[in-house]
Image 1 (cartoon, helix red, strand yellow):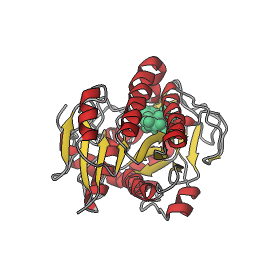
Image 2 (spheres, protein in one colour):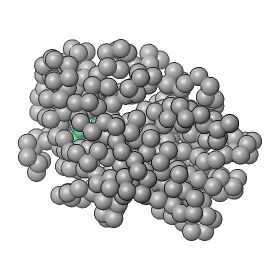
Image 3 (cartoon, protein in one colour):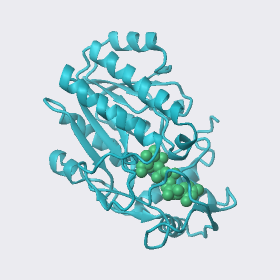
Image 4 (cartoon, helix red, strand yellow):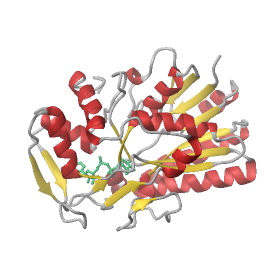
Length: 330
Ligand code: UFG
């Protein structure tokens, strides 16, 4: 029988796809999620859901002491760049403080492996080209800073206590489970691809592009969209590395696409026009974030299954068409 993992935030977008990947290979999974952003319906049958918050220290103690955990995967987090520019301290308290407490509890309960959902938002310096793991960590937003703090804490948790960790810096998670078992459903939705899809489907008036005067070829921001199921398998590969060392990986497809290119991709996939207008820049947005994921590929053998933007968008479109109200629980 499989290994046992605790997944915080396992009802969320990236977390739920990682839960599917673990469950698909026969591991036993317990999800801890307060369902403030996540969805109970995203959790497959056979996976235990504990509804609770990381702020409930008594609960964390009980859960961690009740069994022997092969590892903890920590997804529970606030993750919006723009939101974090409006309430930075909230991000530090929710992401960094609660994360420190979870790491501390893991150390005390003898957990040996920890995986952190980290982010490309660590890299805020304009004009960076393709970003390697050695690029300087200079967050452009409090959100990125909140994760940078957790990466530093984990480095010390390894050095002092031997807690092995994988910091996985996701670039832009996109798409949906190819079997249609999970997808992207945020309330409110702020992410580009679901918004463009809803505009294509006539479910919203159109899309406002957050600035077209960036120093990029078409003036709109460039991001590296990586399929959420490829992110999920990267967690499995990264866990295998955590025998006697900790690892940090940038996790993207290696291809950058502008906002306008995403709109064109949705138009191709959907066969419909997307009405859009140009709005002001959004605070905290770096012009370009594209990962070089060579280290992950070389050290773990990870290969993304979805390389082309149209293929990623097609899975997102299929899920959204089949689930026009998402999980229907908001
Ligand atoms: N955008 C628009 N119009 C919209 C929505 C988004 O022009 O209506 C633009 C954004 O300004 C940005 C790009 O589309 O330039 C992508 O925006 P998203 O909101 O989809 O994603 P972000 O790049 O802001 O952030 C996402 C995650 C973060 C993560 C980051 C890593 O939300 O958690 O990717 O690159 F840190």
